[in-house]
Length: 344
Ligand code: NAD
Ligand code: 89V
Image 1 (cartoon, rainbow, N blue to C red):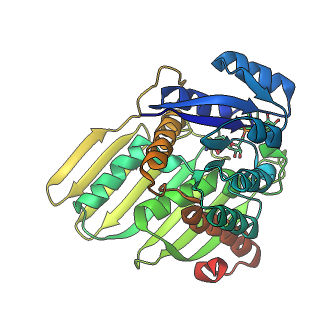
Image 2 (cartoon, helix red, strand yellow; image 1 turned 30 degrees about the vertical axis):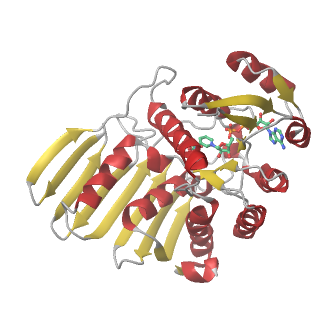
């Protein structure tokens, strides 16, 4: 099996997890890295022993012989970097949020399609093992046909010290975190026909909304509530757990805090501990997210080898990103938003 050689652009806060994920992936190695900040370039280059270091992405792509590019920068740079990779016919992974606007995201999908290269969005939350466990129960038919879901992320965790840019944007929780939870809702209950949203800001020191409540009408006929908050102070901090409730025609699924999965269905009631593994490079409480980074990156490598489309391809992620746009639009107009119109 020939080793896949990747180039990583953006060596910031989260990229370190991606570098560990690549270190653990089968038959993949990051042979070149790029960051405009020389200090971040040095830190990540030394930590992972990468000699080929660039301050300019175009130069890296011109000089290095790569099999793919992994973009781990913040959202403002995504479109230019994805289009740069597409222009060089390089398969490309792009961090979430996909783009500043749905039009930018559509343009990136079109650029990769025209170049004939795969594009995967690093939408990793659905790869968390507790979420995968819920999906397996649904697929088994144990609870029958799902008609209601609640996918919930409520926390008081200080995300701003590690990611200070999150306090400054006009958009916050839906764009940064809600995007993951909306994707989980799609993953578990299917695509969405319309969305209604309400938002508020509780923390006066940040610019964007830190609370969002969304009602989703799924194309299947089911309904779900996606609720997110970074203003929720609890006795035991749940960050970064996503809690899930699903009611089906034959039973229920409850993924509760502490990674406790209770299923009541055709074969009775069972309770399981679905805690994610603590990888040797991971640290609590981030291990849940870190494990999903390793999983999605292995998925990318497997897809690149087999020619299969990644589960969270650019085309797939347009349907999640449309929910983000719909949530901001709907919160502002206080009207339901038709998702098919946005995607047309
Ligand atoms: P960061 O600001 O810490 O790091 C970004 C790095 O990219 C910086 O070092 C910056 O110098 C560099 N950079 C920016 N534009 C560049 C360019 N054109 N060329 C070269 N280098 C460039 O940000 P972060 O917190 O690491 O977040 C990065 C992305 O990861 C964001 O989109 C964020 O939403 C996402 N993220 C995802 C998860 C997840 O679980 N999927 C978790 C945290 C962050
Ligand atoms: O996953 C993320 O995108 C992160 C965090 C979990 C902190 O919201 O920004």
